[in-house]
Length: 262
Image (cartoon, helix red, strand yellow):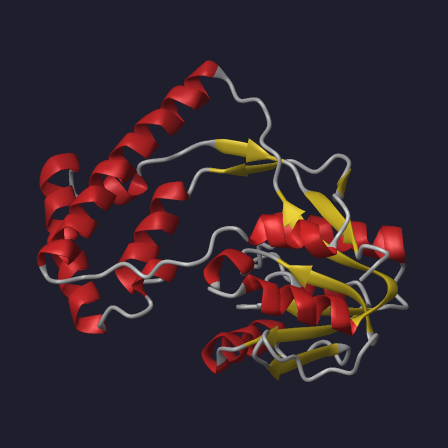
């Protein structure tokens, strides 16, 4: 990967998977999105299937990978009905998808179906690390501003008949029906400092890239963002998007094994 690409925690976790499990394995990245986890896995020489229901997401992942990896397969799939044989995958990666579906058990059953005996479900995590008092204060202010801006954005939406889309949030309980309690492995020596929280969250508002906005029209999202941007400029200045947050974290794997009775 060139220096303009920042895969951060995802690259560190991909490296750790390669180190722990080797490269002669098959990995399914379920809900692959923009390929942020898939591409580092493929870079490590692992046969990787990047699966997502969205053709738009997969198209972006393809552009990011730029045809560099013959071992990376991009596949449009519905996670409720994976187009893969039983017991065909060594590791399934799932990051930030199960909380966005209303029937997580169907997906979890599919994961157990495609995993080989002894296969693993792995979820990435980014454990927080200590920051200085000044850094904590800086992050506190960033969060306060973000909260204010977000409240204004959603208030505008609600005043124009926006209805939130809810999801089943009990997926962790369902996971424990099919998998043993996970064990954790950390990527030794990895530290990432993230200061772009404001820009990241604002971009999600501007584009409507929140799970609860999936049924909201683009016209309403654009109108809400225009009004919110004007509000933020009046209150915090034209350069409000440059307000820095501050967080520091490592990279780790939460590794799940299918219960023996499944």
